[in-house]
Amino acid sequence: MANHKTTQRTEKNYDRMAVTRLFYQFIQCMHHLANLAEPSTCFKKKEQELNKFIRPAPKNEKIVDGINQINAAWARAIRKELIRHYTEEKFWSFEFIFEYNFLFTEDEIVELGHQALTWTKKNYGKKLRQSNIDEFLV
Image (cartoon, rainbow, N blue to C red; front, side, top):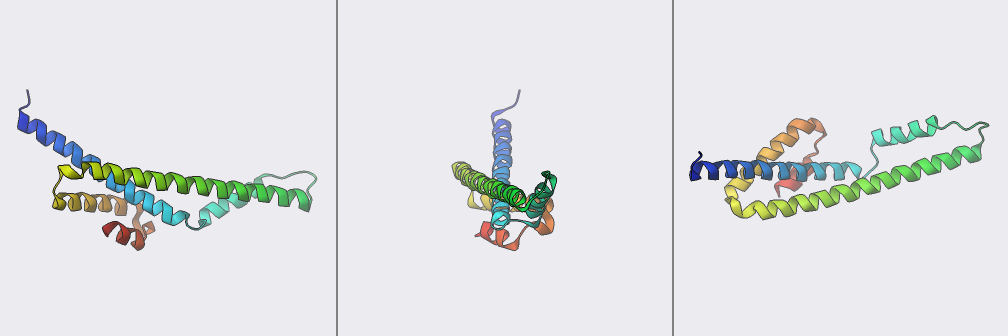
């Protein structure tokens, strides 16, 4: 049977991991929001693929323009929904971090934030913008 100190240490480690994950999620949301500020090349290519995929017969300019407009509206709506999602997730990540804040010293919070930043850099590599890192470190 575990003693009280062991249980406290285990709970503290669990809380440290949870806060690190929340920081990671927060940075991830910042990264995705920055990428969604403008439609990415990849997103534009997918829209073009969709335009090419739908091939009406017989083809005329009116139907092609109509399909392209529908696809463009779809892409804008998807982008808008993703922006809403990441904004909301960023807010909730911050709220949960704030709730855990009282469990740790300021130095521990900084350490957990840096651990999350290390994870983010490892996963996103050069795709992670310096502006996201700077914004997070403020």
